[in-house]
Image (cartoon, rainbow over all chains, first blue to last red; front, side):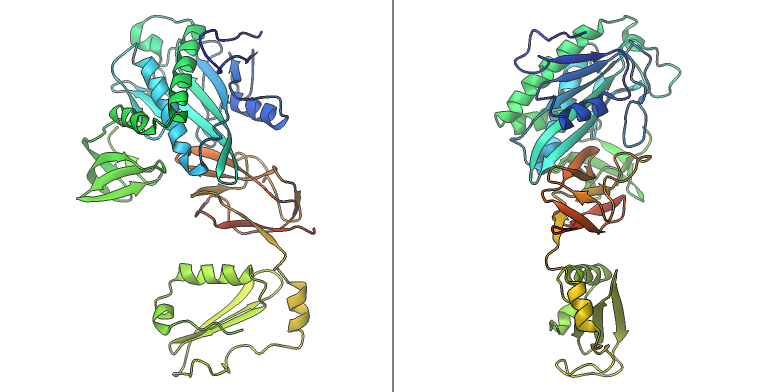
Length: 252
Length: 169
């Protein structure tokens, strides 16, 4: 089954639908290697059997209930040390779509989308291919819980859990891809500062006191995100930057 | 070859700097390096695999330029060993970014490349992860992997050598 998205310029003009797939990111990677994929292609599946999360973690989903897809981009205008910019674009775009359904979603650094009270609804897994100092291609894998009842899984929820309604996956996919395309074009145009500000504005606990651990527990304030994507935290008056896994949020 | 550095700098050398120096020397094609200060003598001599490191406190102040008695004298076999171990023609594959180095596509899989494998330009040799973003690093050269310079799951710096490739291999 092939469909295309009507309301976009270049994303989703080619969509590969798979009834079942190990991982849409892996499938996209294979196509890229065989030079059978290009910018804008979407790999979409109803049943992802080995969905990839953070290196080794799995992303569980019931067939046909949630959105699991990968989007191929070729952000050759970005240097490899600017790759966090693309991550911000993707997270912000997902947040903007979810915000139409509920005002209590936030982005959790670096790339999860949470509901303030109910937990995680979406995750992003970006796999890049670099050509020396420049980005060659990016596979943007997105998992979004839509119609699956997630109540049995602690700290996770779906749109269905939130509103009691079920949704047409295709409609939500279309909204997401349109939004990503729009913000991606803005990034290409050099609007990174505006995009970064929007990402920060919707970041969990931005500019609020909270408990962290970086080996020792302390009360600090997230004051921003560096160009390299590191989290900038005010720790006792001095500003520290943390990579993923170098800092934990406590009590969330 | 004797490298002379200011004692004040050497006295403050940290383990990491010494490691970097060893890496530099092991990639330089030099067979042997001796460093001497009033505080200590450092002698690095390269054998077949890893560089052998001898690091000892100097028993007494020694003139910086004087030959060190304690340092291993070049053996007759050294020139032959040096030409065999000539690394000057080897090419480094360097990290284009700061992050965590992974040799496998996922925790259960085999390494992208091992010592002895041949690589082509565009072939993925490792993954560097930073802020949960995963980057496949491609070789820009063709040749044979001679050495993997970083352990799996270790942090790497920008421009840090990851692999040594023999373009003739």
